Image 1 (cartoon, rainbow, N blue to C red):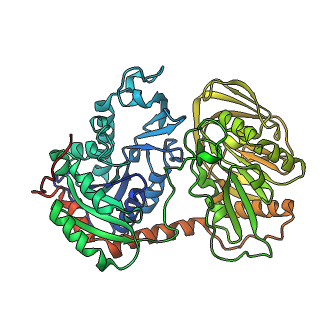
Image 2: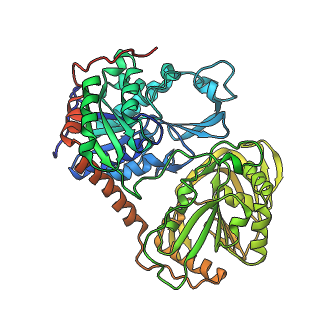
Image 3: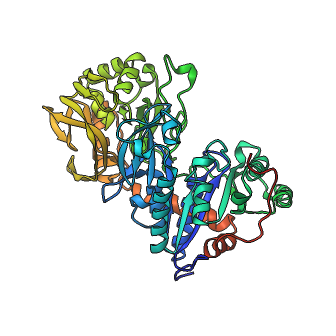
Length: 539
């Protein structure tokens, strides 16, 4: 399969859009799996997501902010991530508004009504983007065209469901993109949730005739059991829709890439108004099964703050044998923790209020007074400081921080997007920065990744630093000593190697359980002719 693939146009590489019957159906994972499978065949492949809504982002080497899922899909494709792969990123700041990041740079805040073109939804500085579907569609198709010009294949990921009929008029990420670029669509359904046949049929039948003509087949995801019991249903689905199922991917524990969607804090545990969405990935993160290298485990509690961002910072901790990571939202859950992490957030001032409201702020202050370790990353670092001046993010003005680090923070209109590298605890470290808050460090016991340490409290703006293996082990040794734990980091844990193994497993799923010949034909030859219409079609 070496050599350049050709789409029906001939002058550009092939394309495929992976859509889903719902959010979290498995689009991101399937896209990454197809990218890794193709890369292993010698195909020059790139991922693409026209419009992403996520608080989990990444900074490319050219200083552009994109969704972290697209960065991991680029790793699956074995290419360097760029802004072309995610031209529009929406970062929620509340239930009703988001920061709009265009081609890797923030252009302002918009309400949902403003973004989708409803009256009265725009804010200063972004009126030119409000409701301009044609402009945004032109931008994303230009980016896709450039990727197709420089790669053999581009695997696009949709968002939500292509049958969200209330948003079809302004769609630039699902069928709107597929129509504009004339690329075939494969729809993924999560059978573990139940109702997958109805979801496939209903998704197709709610699309217009023109949109349906691009839907080339289905992929069943997260199947458990004997696949032969499923086959009669797949045949009936083909009879009803005229489209075949291109694979049944088995349920596999521990598979996934950096997530972009989150779950809300359970209402029963929310004392006041909703804070938007936070990403919990379940109540407890699964650690590596291997036993601890030393005599003790190390318990890490991550405060599930409102609008939590880049929660994947703790993935590298969870990958360490003997490190148990869980997300918490009650003060009593900090009692047995050896390390408390305050993660990033798109709402630093809101998160501070939330910590105080739940008694977590007092519990963290007591830990610091007792010399028990606390780590703040980005927004968490800002909260640990003495004073915050915010006329940008929350517009709350002067706010007192937790006062545990000698730091004063001022929010700037321009966002810092950087890929810093340096040294800490005698080890090389790399990371990335995404923040409006500018920190002035006025003291501390030692510098720490452009932040500082005071006693057992550490703070930095650097995301991703814990992925540097030597530094992570050195930091955990310091934490274990301060916590009085006989924990010893395993000497051979390589987070980069574990991530590569994960991506290879995704490629294996596609290679072993999907009709790769059919997928390749779609990528090479484009949209099949004669796909039947399934009534009733779009309203």
